[in-house]
Amino acid sequence: MANRVDHEYDYLFKIVLIGDSGVGKSNILSRFTRNEFCLESKSTIGVEFATRTLQVDGKTVKAQIWDTAGQERYRAITSAYYRGAVGALLVYDITKRQTFDNVQRWLRELRDHADSNIVIMMAGNKSDLNHLRAVADEDAQVLAEKEGLSFLETSALEALNIEKAFQTILTEIYHIISKKALAAQEAANTATVPGQGTTINVADTSNIKGRACCSS
Ligand SMILES: Nc1nc2c(ncn2[C@@H]2O[C@H](COP(=O)(O)OP(=O)(O)OP(=O)(O)O)[C@@H](O)[C@H]2O)c(=O)[nH]1
Ligand SMILES: [Mg+2]
Image (cartoon, rainbow, N blue to C red):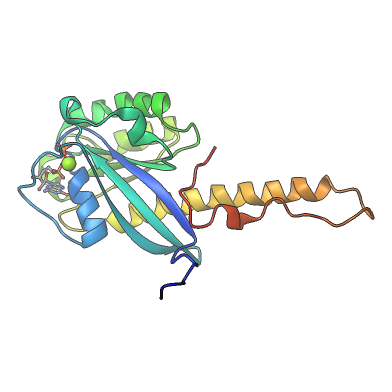
């Protein structure tokens, strides 16, 4: 319809994929957005993004997921990549210890470039390769707890926990956003002097609906 003005979604959330080269970021993205997996995928060059719309707590949420190369020399300008992101999926490969050791480096990068309220989920990918495991599930649990991250082991190949990882991030973001809107509404209500004039609701959540949502 030409004159249709309403959006097809209630919220648009930008999520970034980060982690070392080869951990499976691009395959996690293609599994989640197109239900595709490629055994011989090439390293990402520059930035790509894909979207998927899904239901979160009864709201229609469009997830816009950004993907770039883990390798420094192929990466796009960092600040632009993180700008406006409200969630991050930090991926390591359970068969490569180095990619787990580098999680701290990626957390530092998030701290330097992303919003301080960004929701972070750590994903130990390639859980189908359990026989080649180099990172114990418990080690990751400990790190996740210490750093205050959510954590799941995933397999893009077997489509294991991919949905759950994104659902968890999106739900957490949505809860933060709706709590903020509620707090703003309460503040606006208490600021009104009783019996004088009309209460104007300045916390109308329609302001954030259908727009890239920034958590600041
Ligand atoms: N067994 C297994 N292999 C996987 C899985 N996910 C990705 N791979 C493989 O790991 C390799 C690298 O995957 P990519 O998705 O290209 O990795 P990436 O993190 O995007 O790498 P860069 O773009 O270089 O940063 C490919 O050969 C994939 O087929 C998984 O869950 N299980
Ligand atoms: Mg890639």
